[in-house]
Length: 164
Image (cartoon, rainbow, N blue to C red; front, side):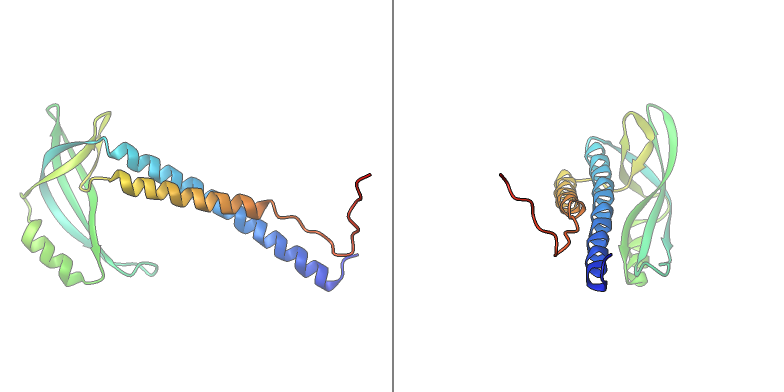
């Protein structure tokens, strides 16, 4: 039977193992994001016509406004329309000025599209150094998660076996 102190110690080990599992799942998500970013670095550039620019209000968990662009472009003569995130700011007036100066309907802008699936596009180009940084972060989180999962509860009064 475990006493109070031993139960608390076992609970501490279990919570660290749970955190380790969470870190491994987080690392997998980061790896998926980095792979997507690496794929996007090969996307091709094309000219697009801006249809509209909108600002999304922050929700309870976010603290900044987000600027989205809706634009039309053509690939191999086939027209596409897409909506893409462009930037964010805590100052809504800053984004409104950005729209007024740069993103009026009919403006020309460069967008990036996936050559194998031209309907997938982005107003921002991914960078491979950022994707590489994500992979490093995933490696750190994953290795720490594995170390935490491997923790074992060791009762204090147990006598270690002797090697004969």
